[in-house]
Image (spheres, rainbow, N blue to C red):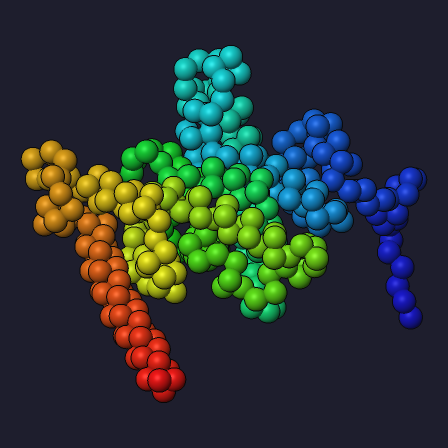
Length: 325
């Protein structure tokens, strides 16, 4: 015999009908109407479950990135706020702590949801689930800005800890960043059928070309990110960077600049050459020297092959002339 509850169920106490959030604009309206920071966290938690159009999903990702800015620490977040928004000169003053603590928790929630719903690859085929988003110009630009390398190792950053951290979100973000940077360096060719979701069939080649052009322009800037994350040695792998003969002059220039800047001489003076930087312990200098050697060897072998092909073609022509006479 089914037992009845000795009380009225709370979920049935609502006199009005419960409805779903009706799209991105409805979600955004609720965001602006929220009166508590807990309501903001609740909206962030369910945001990616709201049914939206593809262009609205991209807009939502950009919105979450802006909310997550400064998630790593309250100190970082405080530096992003205008002076007229707080009293006193630092977040750790008692009068300021609730103001930043609440907003920091909201920023952290946005970061966690980005990791769980966007950066984490849930694709069941060769293509990552986030691919259709990062090929969009606006999302791509906002990702590069959010994951920008700091000016020095002790500056504030949104980048995940790069080693020895068991934090789930950092692990997801590191995996995403490595695959994302590989996409930037290799282009859309590494993923098959990248146009199937969100790309128009009739213009897929044009869209892929536009995405690859966007990636090529961003490559020199991503070198700073590779250095900060201690991932310079990925550039030695052709599977990551692509054919070395396709390395643009701007990339070579930035590689050498970073090799000299990464580590300094024993007396604090900038290294005078890449070779000098290598002696002083620069990892990037070693990468540059190896890449130079690889490039030189590839071009040598290419010249030999072209010479052999030209010789073979000349011999064919001579044979045809001899046969004709």
